[in-house]
Image 1 (cartoon, helix red, strand yellow):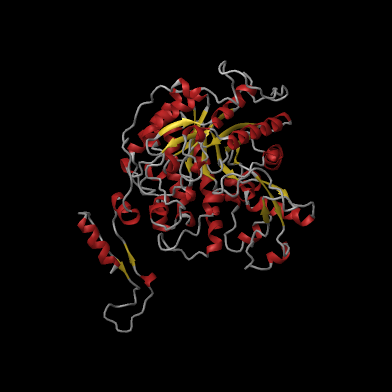
Image 2: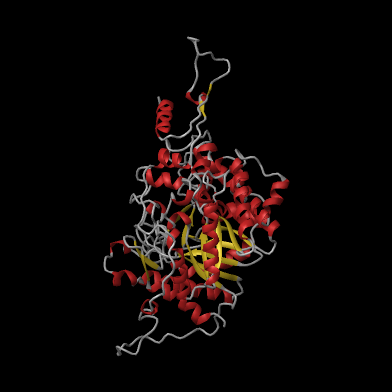
Length: 577
């Protein structure tokens, strides 16, 4: 019945459809004793990009601005810093504590700083000019409660048409870099096969606009929006075929822009997107891989895909800076016990070390992780280890916060022996509350991001750990950091929205921590604030705000928040001229 329904639906759309059913060879259609499982039947249906949207996603929303617009002059009134940074001549009478500059601190002259955004979170225009659907179009449209607010990326911040204005605004603010991601399914609507030249021309102009405003463009090749067709054809990151398809995609991008873009990031936070697996049932291609193994199968393929992309980029232009973006927070033992110290090391191994150790150190998995993954993953060959090792120039880390870590209540060894333990196979636990069970590690972000606290006291130690553990060739960069202002969604008055004291203080304190680390010899080369403006924060929709700009989603007007000026002011104060 399902096949007939699809066939009829597609004919009604005047699309060419071919259908073939393959059955078990020994079975005949008239045999009264034939048996077969449903998995034995396979159909091949030719689908257009529009068919993919209609069958798997459904109707989408659009915005009234649906052509590229030129930037307008930035009103000078919007570039006046808030009172905490600068006190105008009128009105007078403010009395504030003296703030002195620490003359021993400085950002190097070539230190880059800017903002970041990601295609699905900001672009909108999801069906425009041939873009194919990604898994996130399905997750936001079809999967009940996957996004707590039922928001989608259909329009988002309309960046696809308003990118010129966005780049002009970050230039007017005084930022030096803009990091954005490419939409894989915009360039290759099916993830492989035919190339969408309209998408390439769009990104041509995004890059050229950055250069025209003296903004350094930084390109991320993959930020979670996997082309739907690849997931439904063979299981996406769970199938080794994706290594070849990612290589083809990255070669297109590197070939097109290697002369204009120096900084590249291959994949963004594989720790996170591999843990999307298993994807919700009944919406995507089924897999026989056990659920608990799926993130690590994904990670295995990511390491091979990333390293392959790195070598492709370097073969086209050896001067490029190519890295991947890791993520996680600093890990502090809850107590000074031996078991909590072991738990901390396991936490590093199962988080940052999962990808950093193979790429920066050994070409293979860290010691705590390897006994688990070697039970079901093929070991890397010596050739693969050599391919993976050394394939990141910068230690690019999306580093927002810190947490305490400790052993499970039952102990690490007991956890490792019990595969049903809720903390297995990592067998470590974490908390954001001190051991006395009373004080939080720092001011909390929005309740929609319960993992996030302003734990900036540990920024210097975190940066030391990155450099001393993984020793990157081109230094450490904080490629995402930011704060969700608590309850910002509830504010309705524009003037109240634009004053974001928690976020402003976070940026000041975090950058002071970086200055301390630099003064102590850590090679920190740049920072990217998350994010360019309020956007679709994945499963939290638009309810959680990280932007240094506010966007009125009804009118698509942009406004600088106080935190934008606090961020830039730190570089005006401390960067060498």
